[in-house]
Amino acid sequence: MILNNDIERILVSEAEIEETVKRISAEIDRDYANSTKKLLLLCILKGSVVFMGDLMKHITIPVEIDFMKVSSYGASTKTSGSVNIILDLLRKDLPDTDILIIEDIIDSGRTLSYLVNYLTLKGAHSVRTCTLLDKPERREVEFTPDYCGFTIPDEFVVGYGLDYAEQYRALPYVGILKPNVYTK
Ligand code: IMP
Ligand code: MG
Image (cartoon, rainbow, N blue to C red; front, side, top):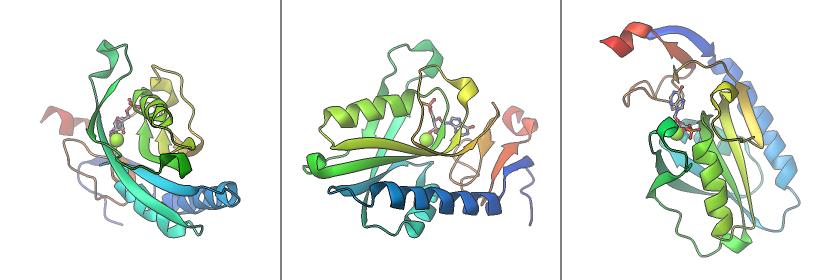
């Protein structure tokens, strides 16, 4: 496998991701098998798009998909925990819907705690969360995902959907950037 020149080291390999995607999709199949509501996989753009695509291929129960786009207000200076909704979820069937939010990474916890609250208030039958990566050391608000791929240390990572300045999203693994990339 050819390592991108800007990557210091691989934190989660393609094979590890594949195995974990299969594990989580089997958990989702099992947990929602008896639900009478429709299951909506809600992808948070853009970072979760690769994870979502892989996950949905392995889930065997019927699902619908949708998308939201949000941006955090500069985290640590804000205490409100609010996020900016750039693309909203406009559906009238939320009372008949189990929403499973698909996220790339949990950092401060602000994005997901806001979204769970927002979608619950909008009237969804249930709202759960699924993240590929979790950096619990960075938490500013308490938040525990329902499904989690990997707990990782406090490092800035890219690949498999995650970006630095909109680059590196297409890498098939999750890697740590070389420090000189930030200081170029
Ligand atoms: P938070 O949990 O609200 O702080 O925000 C999580 C979001 O921050 C993620 O959806 C990513 O967009 C971004 N993010 C946090 N840590 C990283 C990282 O290590 N690499 C790339 N994006 C990150
Ligand atoms: Mg994101």
